[in-house]
Image (tube, rainbow, N blue to C red; front, side):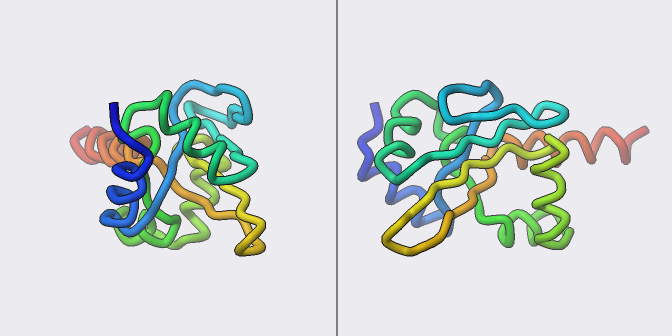
Length: 121
């Protein structure tokens, strides 16, 4: 079992933080396609989510990082989240005064594989 400190250290090493997973749970809502957006009311709720998920369903990248990886704009990444092509976790942090959005590593890999299949056809 990973500790919360290990999760935070891995998130920091990746230059990002949390992410959702393919199945909706409390605080989650399904979007079109396969996608799930999980909304955490605070970092404690994210830590509880992290205890229940696989690493690649919890950790991810910021929309800007995903944009660079996929070769698209940040706006396109947000649209892909809304379309259900990417999973995201939104963590509300009142101390910072805004919500943090992370895109799951699992959904980024899924999108990369989807693109490979399209190119191979």
